[in-house]
Image (tube, rainbow, N blue to C red; front, side):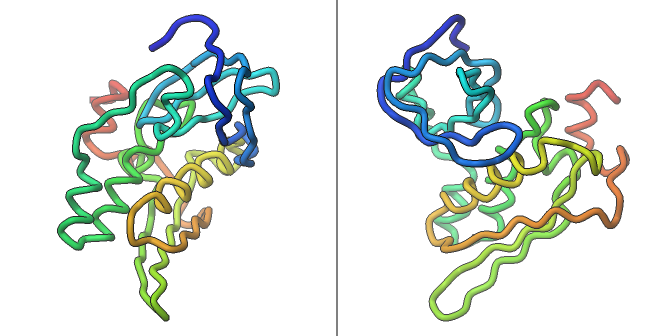
Length: 180
């Protein structure tokens, strides 16, 4: 991860934290990378924290990964739902170093086709109802789903039933958190 201040080489759209709103960071903006997880870069800006997607890593002077992902493999096999689940594994709560799938936050994933439109509906929760990161995480999940070829629309609904608890964390997630 880069240390110190970076000047953006071109303008990028980023997701503002915690609101989840899209903001434009102009070329020449000074940012500092505070975290890099799941192919996104959380940066400190003059306007606060924001997330820059991997597709815009070059604006930070970082070369994006070129290896074939599990998402691309699932799409090639015609498994859009599998691709969505793989893509959701690249979404992180900015405060917890475990993806939202392994945290047990995603409750339901439905892929539907109608009128030549493929739509994904996600039901997910947060670790706590008062979590201020909800809009950011939901916006990140939606934008990543929409990046999958063949997906035309995505809706991410935050739900609170059943309430999340630590038993919902996968074994891999528990290992990353030092719980086992």
